[in-house]
Image (cartoon, rainbow, N blue to C red):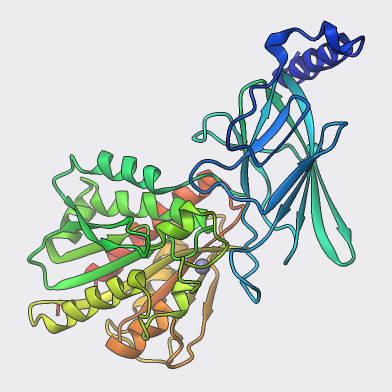
Length: 404
Ligand SMILES: [Zn+2]
C-alpha cells in the first residue's frame, strides 16, 4: 500500500468515526486554530503567517470546502505572476478540497506542497483540476494532510532565510566574501557576494530576484554561483582574471510579502534601471557607476536571473556591437555544446533606453547584458544542470576573450 492510500484510508475512517454524534469527537482531534488564521472552519484553518505567505482572502464552508482568492499587491495592470502561498491546518489526517480563484490573470503556477517548507512535492495531476469560468482560469485542488500544517505554494519558498543559509554555507570558501550592499525600502539587508580576485580588472555582475515569484531563476543562480566559486581548475583560472559580484536577492520586501511583481514602492524593479527611483535598484546603479568610475575596473558582463513560461535567454542582438565582441553568441554556442538533448533558446532584441537591466548595461557601458530566464516548471534537476553548465560555458568564453 502506498503512503498516499494509507492516509486516505485513515482519513475516511476518521470521518466515519466522527459522523455519529459531535459528542463522540475525541478532544485531541479538535483543531487548535492558529491565532493569525486567515479563515477557519470545523477542524480546518488557513494561515499565511510566514515569509512569502500571501492570499487575498479565504473562506471555509460548513462541509469543509476551502475557497481562496488571489490578488496582486497593487492595482492592475501588473505582470501575470499570480503568486500564492498558504498553510492548511487540519485536526487530523484528511483530504481537503481547495479552490483557487484569481481576481486578475488566472492560474499559472502548478501547486507544490511541503510539510517543512524546505522539501517540496508537485501536487499530483490527479489532484489538480484546472477549469475556466467567464474566460478566467481557476484551479481546484485536493490536498492530503497528515494532521501537521501543510504548505501549499505557487513555487518553493525561497526567502531571505533561505539565502542567508545558502550564503552561510558559502562563507567557508576562500574564494568568496559576503557583504552588505545596502537595504531595501523596508530596511531588509540586500547582500552581495564578492567572488574571486578583488584586485582583478575585469568585472562580472550577477543579479537575481528582482521579481518575487521568479523562484526558478534563483534555483539556477545558486548552482551558477557555486560553479564559479568551485575548486575546479577552470574556476580557479577564471577567478584569477575576473572578479564577480553577485546580488542574489534584490527585492527581499516583495519576496517576504509574496508580491506578484513589485517592491513596496509599487515599482517593477526591472523597469527602473536608469531612473533608479527605488532604493533597491539604486544599489545596482551605484555599484555599476562606481565600477565605471574606477580606472582599475572594467565591467565585462551582467547576467540577471528571472523566470518565465520557458527557458530562454533575452539578449542583445549580435548585430549590435558589444565589448567583449560577440560574447553572447559564443557563450550560448559553448553552452549548447555542453547541453546535449536540450535546446538552448535565445530571443535577441534591443530597445534603446528601455529601463531594464540588460538594456541599461548595454546602453550605458556597451557590455552584454543578458536576462537569464528559467521556465516556471522546468525540471528542478535540469535547472541545477543549466546553472552549472551555463557557468562553465561563461567562464570558458570570458577566458577566451582578449584581456582588457
Ligand atoms: Zn522577471
